[in-house]
Image (cartoon, rainbow, N blue to C red; front, side, top):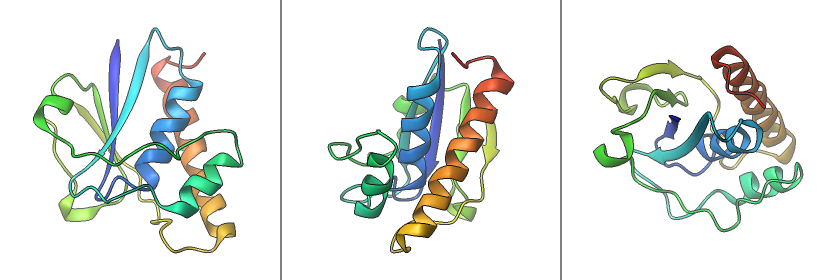
Length: 133
């Protein structure tokens, strides 16, 4: 089974949305996603939790976590979320960067736009890699 890591600095917004969409839409026998950050925050941003709840994905109990060597060891893909120079590197994995705006503190309409862009990128990745249901 392939593992995809979605990473951003605080692991409190974009990467959480991406992992949630990926795991909801993937053929579970083919791949799975985890999310992590280089400097994890205390919690997932409330505006992200609310926007994801609107589409039926509950992030209320999810906690940001640190991207460790152990977590990254078997990853096939690392997808970073526009974190610039502080983006992590995972040896041996394929890498992509999605330059997405941080949803923290954004108006609800903008958070929804970011959420929908994340979903569209996840769907494209799933289809391209043959992981879609």
